[in-house]
Length: 205
Image: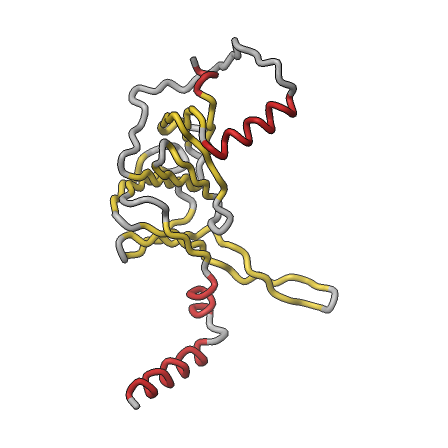
């Protein structure tokens, strides 16, 4: 009987919340637990200044949806889009962020010390493959990782840091706004709202 009453009360509360922004936000968010264990989160402003460092073991990101009015053939309607606000859950506690550059680096990832951002790259070892063939080959290699250097910059183009690995590949996080997931020698990195380049290490030799 007690279980039935608890279930009934919960159902009434949920029904009463239907249509509320809080309800839609709670169940409409696109949430993703970060792959990996233990992350250092570095927060930068648009000019490349490190403003905060956060460390946690279990991290997840949630993109918050916003309701927008649209015009349809039959009149007006609504659609949901991911807003610029993300919710970061750090060991069960929450932090909201909007606009800042965030770099999530799994424990074990080390920055390149004294890295100098290249102002010119000249290829000295041309391949005989055609442009299309090279494109397809590189996309295939990216699936399995290859030796690359990751250069991360602020939204104003200020170099922040660089990482290098023998096996590096990336993918866009479709459920999270402006976020890219990378794996560097088996370690995960998430880049949110940043300019970055991922360059074959052979181009920098």
